[in-house]
Image (cartoon, rainbow, N blue to C red; front, top):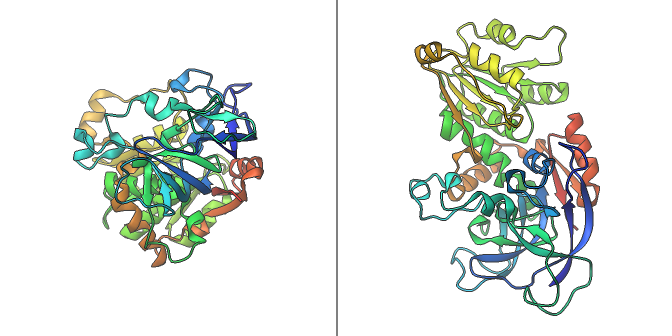
Length: 390
C-alpha cells in the first residue's frame, strides 16, 4: 500500500447532504488483472457524486465510507498482468465508464448500457483503500486492512492515486497539444460525453430542429455546444442563473429563459418563442416542474431526452391516448449512449478547432478546497468545477 490523499464520503447526517472530508488514506501499489494504477491530476465534480453521497447506506448499493469521483484524468503508474495493448505505462489518460466489450449492448456500440456489469460492480465497488497515512511495503495482500470502499464506477477518482478498471481508461497519447489540457478535459469522461451524446447520438439534432436545452451546468452546456454545431433554426437555453444564460447566448443560443423571472411559466415562455413547440427537448435538470411542461409543450413527434436525475421515486406520467397520438418519443440518456473511443477524440478535436470551448466552462479548484467548489456550483458561480490534485 502507498500513502495518498482522498475525499472520503461518510454516510450523510441528513438526507441529500454530502458528508465529505479530505483524508490521508492508503492505496494499493500493485494491480490485479484488468486494472491499472492511475496518479490523478484532476477530477471533475459531477452532480452524480453529490447525489449518490447524499443517500443512506444501502440505497443504490452504496456503502460507506466511500471514495467517489468518476471524471478523473491522470497518468498510468502501474499496469496489471496482460494489460490492454492500447495502454502504456505513464500514458496520460481520461477515466470514463467501464464496460465488458463482449455483451450484446457493447458489441452493438452501446457500452454505457453494458449488461455484464452489475449494480454492485458500478456503485458498490469494493474495499480497496485503507484508512490512515502509514504506508507499508506490501501490496493489497499486506498488513493493511482495506476499510474504505473504492472502484466507484470503475475509478473512485476523488483520490490522488487510485486503482482503476482497465476498460474505464482511455489513453490520450498523441491527442494532447499541451500538458495543461489534461485537467481541462477531465469532465470529458462523463459530463461532456453525456451532453454531447444526448444531442448527437440520441436526439440526432439537425438543421430543421427547434431545440430546448434545460439546465446549463456542465452537461447542459456540453449539450448546448453540440447543438450549436448542428446549426438548428432555434436554440432555447433555460436556467436559473443569469451568468450562465449570458454565456449561453454568447456561445450561440438564440433565446434564453430565466426560471426565476417573476411569474415564469415554461409552457407560455417556450410557446411565445416557438408556437409549434420544440422538436427536441434536452432536460439536464431532473426537476419535475420543468420536465412536465416541457414534455407537454414539445411539438408532435418531438424527441425528448431525459438526462438529469429526478427525485427518488418520481414517476414520469402521461395521458395514454394523448401520448400515442402525439408521436413523441421520451428517451433516457446514460452517458449520452457514447462510445468513448470514438467520441472523446472527436470532442478534443472540436475543442482545438474552437468549436467546443470547454475552457469557458471550467473552474479549477484545489482538491483541498472541494467545499468551495460545491458552494460555487450550488450558487451558479461555477459551471463545471474541476478539482486539481497537487
